[in-house]
Length: 479
Image (cartoon, rainbow, N blue to C red; front, top):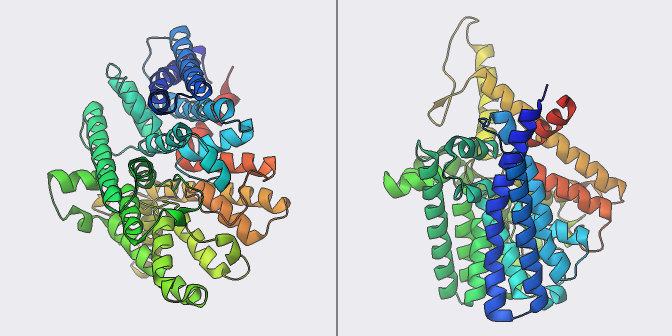
């Protein structure tokens, strides 16, 4: 049974994160004040920031209790935070850019979950104020590290609560024993990689505004740029830089830390990194023969770029994938598989994560081994140097089943709206794995039910299901 104090703790922690997240609005607000002087846009960011702070402040002050945060509290708080942030982050588009609320909510959710779906036409993107584009990419950059990580900058007096919220987002790996040190290191690594990306993109021919936005978007594995048609800004050098940044974003922060502080060859000793590179090689080899007939000598380049963006969940694309329906379904299903797996745990990417994929593969091997060995034989189950218990395998199987179930539900909804099975599964997997590839289903003219379903899929994928289950369970147990 959920008691009143439990609800108070949940709302207190939700308010604390909301209060500190309001600071994020100051970035596009300052840009608009300095470079655009658009009163309507300035007003929309100011109102959004004030509303976010007021909601957070009132929740925190009203429900402030001296009680420690438990894991259940953290899971529910994280779910509430992400939903509320998606809503308040949509306000600048609704108030300042004149988009409908559902479209604004979809765009903000796509950004904060690092999915990167772009529902704007090229003409709309050109007309959008730069501060709005910056806001969407800054949102994705924040979402890549996690909203709770942002809030921890202000939660320096609540170490235990911050640590539980951090773990509830599915980011249980720590670089240091102390949560504050972990927070600082993650932001240092994240910021340094973003700066490196900006410099590389500047040298590749981008202007400063595009370089900043594309660096944030690539490292957060979002795939939302400054143009609907990415081919307008992508050249071979930019292409290589975006692939590099997406791969860096899909690698665990733990691996980055080991490379920086301990072992320069740590990437090549990390099982998730090796599997990531293996998936890129296999995926590229599988689809090249199919793409040659369409793109000739450019097939290798196109295949590699889009495979990298599928498995890292980077989401950048510069070909019309809607033309592949019925013609290159095999390629789409290869992408569905890669997107479903995703990148490393403890990274900015989506999907079920490579470590779970490895556990699933190993569990099949262990099952076969169990059949072959004598009945009472004992052997150790190890993945990446860690002992794996049967409970870990069961949890992985349970998670994967639920993940696939939400995809199936989403695909059924899209198919009920008249879309083909291949297109529906592709779009839903792209949404839930926070990729942003599209075969043309997602646009401003899409049915509202499709937009709402994909919003749910995006949040499910970003939060990795368990906070949502905790929220549903809490509602059922309230007395």
